[in-house]
Image (cartoon, one colour):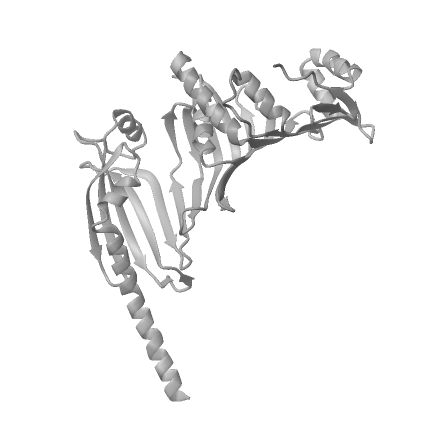
Length: 404
């Protein structure tokens, strides 16, 4: 028995000593001589010009030098620097310390853990205010945690500012499943001296393969406050589901153009937007939105709205089908619903803010758009759509036929 224990102990020690060496060797092989694959994974405005790797037994160090070839990207990076500026040839150095597995620390089993810092190639050695920790598990999953120093940054959306920003993402070994989660204690977008602040911000993006088909979903939740009326806030959750891999880039471009101050609506940009919308409508997608309005003068006020819009995939190559008719056809073939609940306390608070709302409430009640709630303390609205039939609070409202 004692001999078995001694033998087992020797084997464990051998594994503990050999494991880090093997991990370091594999890491070196993945970096050294693999420059072409690394360059292919980079965005086109970054060029890998030099890299080094110093392998140790329990840890290794690597460094890569990336030249920024795009002038606009260079200017954006300089705005983002924490000390130091670029020289004649703008470059970013990536310094990594790789801790070899099979144990990270004393209790975390992993192939390796990589701590990465990003700095500019200047005499000041200015570091970019972001750090990255990557953990490679034995199942092949790669977990990445980005920590970003509280800062502000100019962009096409306006001036962005954040506190407590963290981004976590997990990539499967095959690259077919990816999840990204961004959280921030506070995130501010300021345009035209009008900041909008989102607190407790959370954005989740999941892309996965099911039965050979890829689909992506995006979910955002936050409490949003505008500077011009801080007494009013919206607890907001927005989701986009069932987007295909080909539709996701189109969706991203549409969202960027919607917030870009420099967008010029000429025939070229209109054609590009229409092409992206066609891509979205070809495969279809679903939009959900849940929002709760809060006002300071009515702490017990309730105004909750839940919305579901499903756009069915359609053939966008049909002759004579313009963009408006494509959206209509896609929506007609999907299902939709809008549900709203508002109590009397919120009705009174909103009417006190804007007396014109009282008349609008009365008109909506007369048209059957708002009906008394079951408890008698407010109103509800329930709109559903399916099979070319709209029902509002149970009353059928047939749609006119689709235009030819």
